[in-house]
Length: 180
Image (cartoon, rainbow, N blue to C red; front, side, top):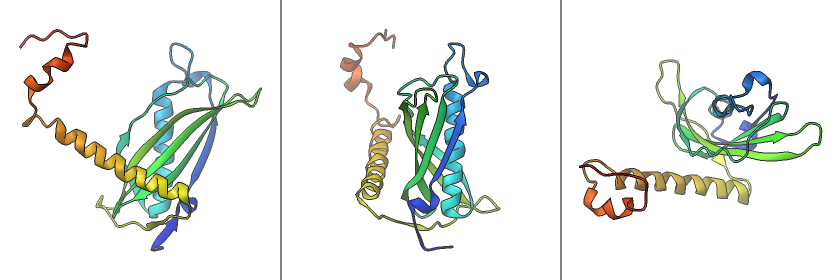
């Protein structure tokens, strides 16, 4: 196993034509189907980088920006944006192309935290990441900040430390009825 790799060594790109069987009741491609494809490409990218099996530990923020239509060609691009000792953040970008017009739209970007595992299911060390350009540095630092922000959110709302009274004023702006 190499000690360090570039993200281009692990990059994976897949394309698939969207069929009627992939659609939901409104005729658009089902978000769950797209999420499944995203998880598959994240797995392939992480496994390629770590040279072992990788499992999904978490998925950070999935926003469906634009609907995908039946008949469009969906292309997913995955690359390793950040590495730890045994885990890595894989960025996945989803684009859909109208094959008649050539118009391409960005439909989704998400970040999958993947953990490298051995045959017994134990976490194993992975190669480091060579940051070759400003984009790679930006993506790596962005992953660090995203991780720190997630920890702050978790800690802020721990059940044992949450002060209901301090947040009641905020709730007045929402469509809720409090009965405690």
